[in-house]
Length: 494
Image (tube, rainbow, N blue to C red; front, side, top):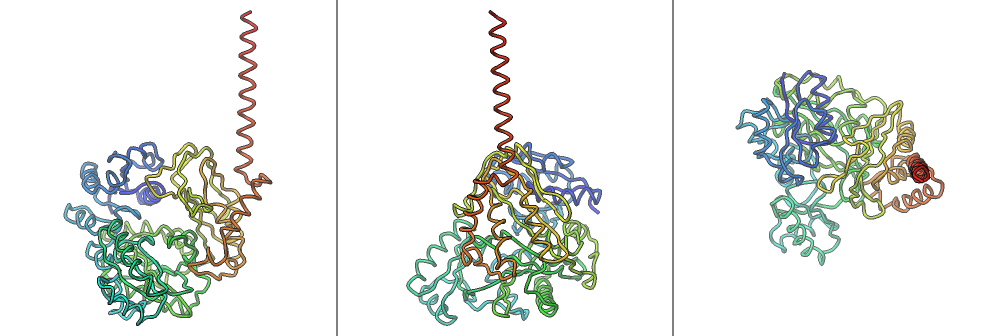
């Protein structure tokens, strides 16, 4: 086992990995930008080193600085968390060449699925169903028209590199195709440095279902169950649950088996996720994420598997702690991503200082967060405040518990998407498990968010609003006392 690990990330995921390190009796090293100097994760670590200004390109994405800190601190391994350098094949390769263990897959494995086009070819060769579409990058408009007409409209134009929903546009007729390809190429080039785009059949009512996998260095690969991630905005997840409401034993066996085959096809090691789109009884390979996922807590809760600790054990050379027969999903877990963003303004980020912050608690509630009262959500990084996860003996109890936990959560100082999560938990289609990746638009959820916000304003129905009222009372009393003391001094002076 390692003696010291550097976590090349920040906020809640850095703390999550550090917790695993502490339980394994491994020292943790944090790196932080100037604006994160006093952040909780930097204080939680056994050691912490500054690595530059706030912009990620000058700090959390600077490979040279991070490698240098690893050497100076004596860290034997680097855990990249998610985002930043977690799926960067060049960084994984640098670690390998510098004699530092990268807690994740090999640079070769990352590269093999870093391109969505290459990944589709690999999965198709392995016998895994893929979405019909072009088998190479689109460079010629006439070729694009042929592909689109052969698979039938609507189609979706995607960037081959990158992820997070960036560089994806739906096309419903040939007249829209040229402009969409050109604009998507521009976005792909600016976002990922690679202008390659491709075309796929657009599935009208898809569900986003993924399988967590673990693989060691000895050829052992298992899946750790399924997750449903269909509630999304701009192709980015907001609510996840495990298991999926549509999952059956037979479907889980088939999809899980294909997830394991997908990992084996690229000689994958460590933790990863195979993502599928499910539509009308069929499922298709979507992409592979070569890292720990934001939504990993729901898998941990229903299976009891500590994925972060398994990552570290695998990277240190140990065999998997589990066999496939050991993995059982018990009960139901739901995760809501609480972000500093305005759901009434197209989920625009809402940076600012947290005047009050108190997370939920009680039975079956887990909170992964890196903030506190007085913490400032900056515009430099993702707007995630915390991940609120609940467990119930069944889906109904999990929903009821999430509604209670959302009621208890107090965030004052920034606009958040908590009203959005409340609206979804109250939605009848969600309660019935009738989900698609278009759920927000299909069921006019934003209209329900407006109603919730207005109702809470009128009734002062949240704990947060009660605290704001208390703040005003305290301020008024403080002001009155100050005035009295000042007047008393003046009278005394006379």
